[in-house]
Image 1: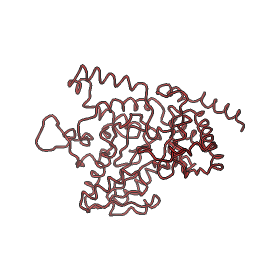
Image 2: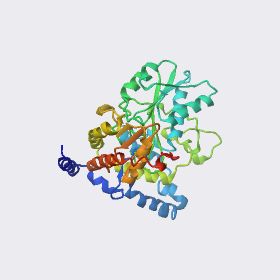
Image 3: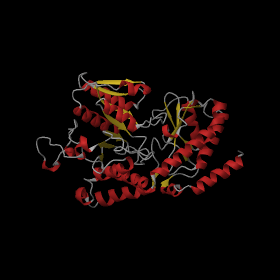
Image 4: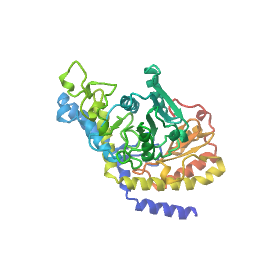
Length: 413
């Protein structure tokens, strides 16, 4: 295909894209190609107005009366229910609260309390570090009674046995973008009596998820990636209704059945609210709700269709660069196992990602050698994919990455 034919074809795809109008609802600088929405989503234009209202009107004028008058106190449940519509949960099964790491701890310890005769938390060795760190922390806190066990990714199913209390897995791997079969793995875990906690940080808002259809037990995820909730946005926790009798280890006052009764002893709330801990972060929740509402306006099936099409185009356009510069595709080409990102390995991966900023392309890097390109269908165009590969080609051809400042890794990559 000639460059002219490709440009015409890509223009036609953008013109026919039913999600194209959503791009104008995000704050994106002209000329910038943002391929890091799998790390931090772009800013919805409505977020600023929403936060101004919360700060100026609800806090500034309503003051403390806004806990009821502006429904601050019920925001975690309200927003949780909205997230539930994206990931196949029923109303009352999700609460938006705390950070992903804290929610992992809460979900794991809740699952352990339901399988108290068992001693193993199982995960894959290449899981996102905070997931494994939380497992290790629970092992240490238990005095070694609970064991944090990690195995190779392809050994998970074989490692499930009657010692395993809970399996902790990320549905979409943060480096490769590999998608796990949630229903099949959950079924296998249940066959040996284990529960499963699913990390949906790279799933919600990116791929269709059906927690109840998969008979999931617990799930957690962050709000700042594909949900566009902003830096440090509140996370969320799903607990299937059948597990609401589990008593959380973190027994904060907002998880109490009557928080404003100020009772001496902890009495957990009857439903999902028991998985709250401290006072809700009102500003963060307000920003998160804007991002979630945007996703709900779109068709999740259309988001997935476009994501896969963007990925196919990226992989196709990258092949000559793989041959010329040694990029190695890490993501699978099969649709069923590919999330909303494309990842490549390269020895100079970090330097190349930094050099791309000179060309107005923002991607990201994960050690030791992975370049990640996040595919966010609400604001990414087909032309952006073609232009990204063209700019990457220039950065490699000119060795723009081989500058001294790019050989020293920053604290945040």
